[in-house]
Image (cartoon, rainbow, N blue to C red; front, side, top):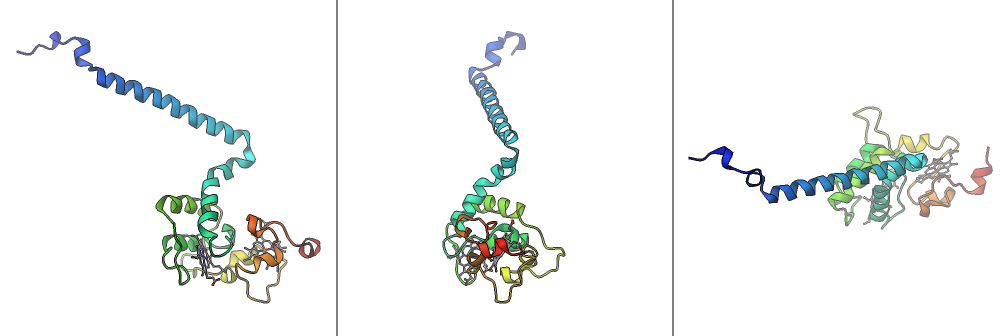
Length: 177
Ligand code: HEC
Ligand code: HEC
């Protein structure tokens, strides 16, 4: 008959599991250290903390979405618009957005969602053009748009659009009351 007491500690604890446990311990320490470093870096630069988290998504957004037109800043359209556009890259204004793999889709979504607002009511129509977007209008209290606005007109007043800079204005607007 098998007697438990006959098994030595080494037989019960086979070397493979010991190695596995050791490996997990080392890996946890390394991982913990990495997270600490990242958090430390984010805390050290409070102004960059938020953007550091979304930097990859922002870069992917600019890479993936700048092939045919300028990339619009997230805040000019509601979150619902971005969601629709990201979910349906193959029916994009009569064309399709190439190279939108699942991982980039998730990272871009994380970025766009964070820097845009949802529509005030669930049954509000989802605007697919800046022209129809209330958030675009809210961001332009001084501007009375007479002609229709599209992604092509931003450059008229924002000289930095190609650097994704929508804060800089042409001197004409900078000096206007
Ligand atoms: C293959 C070319 C192509 C790519 C790549 C592309 N778009 Fe577009 N996009 C278009 C076309 C065409 C229109 C229609 C506007 C026009 O006719 O100029 C459009 C319009 C838009 C508009 C409305 C612009 C306005 O003037 O109101 C938004 C917002 C938009 N795209 C977002 C995106 C996003 C987000 C991505 C990346 C996921 C993307 N686009 C990538 C071709 C593209
Ligand atoms: C006729 C000039 C004009 C056009 C065209 C225009 N803008 Fe603006 N934009 C302004 C002015 C001026 C401001 C500053 C707010 C104000 O005074 O109304 C501004 C502010 C903004 C802001 C806020 C910037 C901040 O301080 O954070 C964003 C974002 C923006 N515009 C995006 C766009 C986009 C995207 C387009 C194109 C679809 C566009 N604008 C087209 C004049 C313009």
